Amino acid sequence: MTDTTADTTTQATERRFGSGPLSRISALVYTLLVVEGLFLVTTLPGLVGLVLLDRDAGNVPLAALCLLPVGPALSAALYALRHHRPDLTDLRPAAAFWRGYRMNVRGVLKIWVPALAWLTVIAVNLANFTAAGVPGWWALLLVLIAVAAVLWTANALVITSLFEFRGRDIARLGVYFLFRSPRVTVGTVCLLIVAFGVTVVATEAVPALLAAVFAAFLLLIARPMIDEVRERFTR
Image (tube, rainbow, N blue to C red; front, side):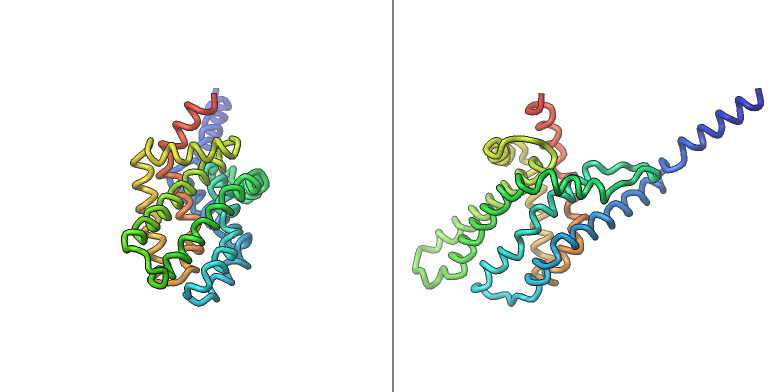
């Protein structure tokens, strides 16, 4: 009878170890640090070039080239954080990151490259807006198009990082959820404003150093969209 009680106590202790509040917080912090480190490793050449570039309109195309590695790395971060386990005894964020990177790199680049190209064209036009001699409302229209493109890219990036769809289906879902989930759209706008503000006030390096945190918030904001995609489009 005593042995049985002792075994039960031991099993309960084992179940509790690694699953308490402090352990969950430690697991999350560890995962964020590992994902952040891997994000920096996979984007380092581009980020170095981006930091060294002067904030000049003529460098916009070069900045876009420097941002090419960010798409696959951000997708891998989203995948790793989505598959994060709060159990301190079962943490494999590095394996999840590399698995997500390998699985999604092609699909992400199909979204990321056209989006960067489109945003580069818009940025160059805005930078040379005065010389073009076009009406003022055209600048506002370009800004609205750029914001819509960034929001669509964010939706499409989350979807392609977590689900397997054809490229055209991801494009359609990205547009669909811009209007279907206003809360997600507004939350993403707020997150982008914070990231933009940090970049303007500090340097491009600061958002990169907080990439894992931004990815975690993006996942949190996009949860209604993720749940609806899983429930409506994966059965």
